[in-house]
Amino acid sequence: RTADPHIAAAARAAGVSSAGAPAKPKRPVSAEILGPTRQFGSGDGRPGPTAHPPQRTSSHAGRNPPPARPPPPRLNGAGAAADKRPRPVSIAAPRPATKMGAGMSQIFEDSPLKINAVAKWTNPAGCDLVFVGANEGLYYMSLDQLHDPTMVLLVRQRCLWLFVYRGILLYRHDLAQLFPADAKSKLKGRVAMRLANNPPSAKIPRTKGCMRGVGGEAPGDRRALAGLRPAAVRAAAPVDNARRTFLEFKSLPCPDLPQPLLTFELLIRSGFKLPFVCVGVLRGRSDACVRFRLLDLNKLDGQIELSPNDETALDEEVEVTSVTQLDLNHVLVCYRNMARVFHMDTGLVRSRTGNRLGTLSFEFTIESVQCLDDSLLCFYKHGFQAKSFLGGEVVQDVEDRAHVYRFVGFAGQNPVMERRPADDPMASCDLMLIIGHVSA
Image (cartoon, rainbow, N blue to C red; front, side, top):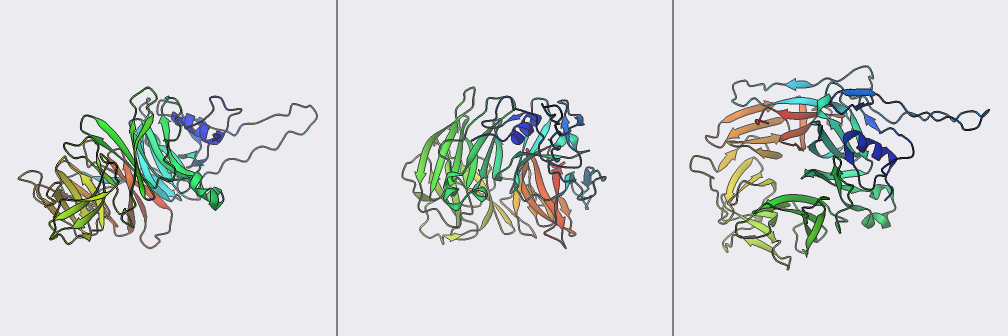
């Protein structure tokens, strides 16, 4: 498809080359901006000079010059007040008796975007960029310019999910709202965007209609990607060449996928070349026992298997919020207010080591988690809390009843949350970065 010059200009400003972008546009253009000013970095992390719309003069004497182009849409980071420059705001933990030093830092104020996912990439100049996938498009912002935070539009189409994988930005866009309904099936897909100065890339083959995606690493440094399509799963692997392209190695029809699909995660099992796709968790004989719905990518039949085998299991669907593999033998499953570590082969609650707990309970409904070395960080409606696997005590507790929070993804090792007033949940949101909880 023909590249949009607005997108190409924004990509070059961030050191990103988008798929199909021309090497030399016909004329300079400005990117759409969300922020108080329109500035492009100078490459060393310092803000550059203010960009101005290009001016064109008439080639015929005596004729009136064409009217100047209107400035591109932009939004001040603090709402309508153009003279108010947002500044990074740190919120310290309200309970200083905790052991961790985590807190929240505001990286963007009053954003109107409907955010679906975030990811982070560090460019060759050492600048940390946060990519924001939203219904309004794919944006990026620099964490090195929080004194003047600005979001730049990179791709206009709605972005449903994204993540950075070995220097490649994977994202899923949706053009259906721009075209008639009969063209929807041809206009949905997953795209790999080359970061830095690598050659431009094309769409990953045969991934049109992918609704979700996930990546994983198998033993022997073998990496795999899986994409979910209606009644099918496609698996691909990166080709380790100069272009870092992707090669589809398997497509499995799966008519028996559970609906709604609450879980779609890759699990690595010892002794198998390719990973398994976990598409659900069932309750076993008790709450301390589960069975996993697994799709074996090593087979071709596309049949959903239940593991482990247990004829006495209740097989009640568990509405999980998170499934995280800790190692080759243990999987962390979170649901309601519980976080439990299960052995992958037996399905029983099992601590990873003798001095660690296999179950942690909280006083709120868990929305998402981040597993740290010795503790578990859980996000919920009014903040986040961390408990230790060693003794179960609270090691971090940040609660803010005046606001409503929503976890939107990870910027590297740092979680990102939306913050809105509790009395106005439809208001524009502030983007908050969780810091201080890991050594990074």
